[in-house]
Image (tube, rainbow, N blue to C red; front, top):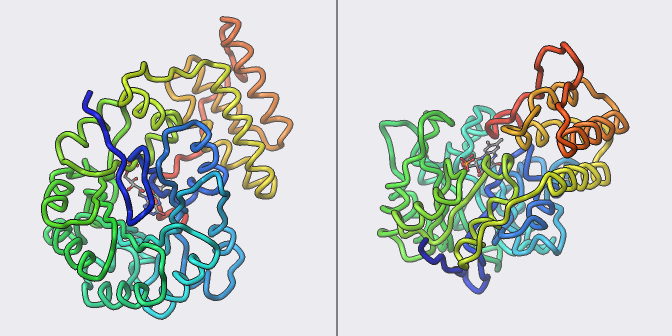
Length: 353
Ligand SMILES: Cc1cc2nc3c(=O)[nH]c(=O)nc-3n(C[C@H](O)[C@H](O)[C@H](O)COP(=O)(O)O)c2cc1C
């Protein structure tokens, strides 16, 4: 396996060069803390935060800006289409102590694009330039962006977007190699990451479809990128960052035991309940548990039993029953005869927008 090296966004060291990809509705403060505890995460990024909400004191947007010291380095990601609001929100991120300000140029949700934000900025370079210059004048922390390949499949312009961003003073570019038109279909184009890396001097990271240790190393090797982002793969395996780091340092990759898996689920549920009311905490728990137990013996039945649980105590009992059964080698029957039903998996920023 090749060595992977840390890199710097100005004076901020991203070590290891592995980034927890922002995911609206998923990478809230609890999920990010959980992943930092699992190890190997070099940079955490908030969910995308609406500048319209933030600058009008919307409580949800304000909550999304919170982070813990243990998450550092931490980037706050904002989205919007109005330069003035973007600048104000960027200043707010700096004031609350974020290490980096990241601009979302990738969200495909119609609600976001309609106002010129998210991936809408990919087809309006004039607006993007104004926004980046406005923000740059107002903040002293590094400004970074996360882009897509292009807006339409026929208008791929990631390299041009990256060059424009660099010229405006952006200090790190992350590319998710799908177009807005593509949404989450097909596969991410990592060749574009390589092309951007060759076209700009600032550090470049790639995003899309990394779910294994080998996959992460292949992306570094094939593109020469500085960093790799992992999103959905971290929901299925929160230790993936640590495993990549282990291998890069010549160690065997950490293999979580059933006890580790049980512990991490319980820890996550505790943090969620500290952070939000019971019902949303239960829903988020169902979502992670759903991803997390794929491939485990009896996992589908366990997910069904969680799906039918509606209180904290019920969730805790189901976790206890499930892990006790599989740890002792007993078959897990869940709710006998129940049809397999699961919480829907959030698969893009659209649901959360
Ligand atoms: C549920 C979900 C929410 C997402 N929300 C955001 C977001 O808020 N900001 C952003 O830049 N990208 C967002 N993305 C895109 C991811 O950061 C990432 O680029 C994409 O999922 C591809 O990487 P992956 O295959 O490792 O998940 C989201 C993706 C998902 C699945």
